[in-house]
Length: 382
Image (cartoon, helix red, strand yellow):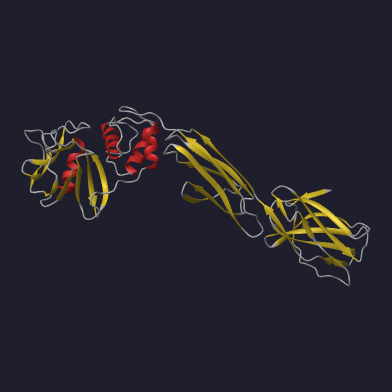
């Protein structure tokens, strides 16, 4: 018969030793009980005596709690049930007479914690996803979350509940798992699931959380933006163009399923010359790299000479033209005769200049501040 749960009244009680020749055994069934399940404390009193009161105590910190009690059968055996709320050490005491007790050796009650979790919220890039759940008992060990390649600790509250916001920054199937590094007496438990995040079609003028997710990913890959601001302005359009150029895609400046898939798999582009600090221009791809110590620091969409006349080779900046000019060339960095890298009001996805390297106007002042120095190395590739 079920007597009581582990939250019974606390009893401060020292472990008594065996008296005389009587012995008492104790075991738990099952050896590992699920949280909130029923555990049976069983054993045998020898020599056998029927009707001997038996009480079972479970350790709770520095004290012992009475959790169940009953009496022996004619063969000296007993089976007493209780609800399991935590892993603990336990012992049983048989009251042979008013003055005589016999205690069992301690037994360990193992427990399998209850771990539950689910994801709620939208399933599109940039939307809010919330992982909620509970671990009972809350102190069963260290709870960890693995999301993709990242692992972090989850800290349940006193009642075992937890709530986390998950990023939905890229489309595709996102796999997550919660696992417990258990304390002594507890079994390891794990919950693993996945959810599918979809990517929206986006274009110039779009706004919202999906645009923010797009911009954040482009920024991670070092494509130049004015900022991650949730608005698909010209800077976002030009960053998408640069990405499409690098990956050999159609130069539309729009985002669809194919571009989202490429974003998921993409890495920061590699420099053509993987050493030193310099500028690289690719006439084929129509992009420019800022390279710092052999690594691409930024990628920007550019337009070179319409006739293919932008000179290929290794050059050095020899003249500077800050601000604007009569030819509408802004913040010019000259590397050979009249050929320069400069801001311009029109930077189409194809070669369109008289031979210079056009960059977006908003990009030019910052670029000039970083690289407008005599002697800066400029590498122009076919």
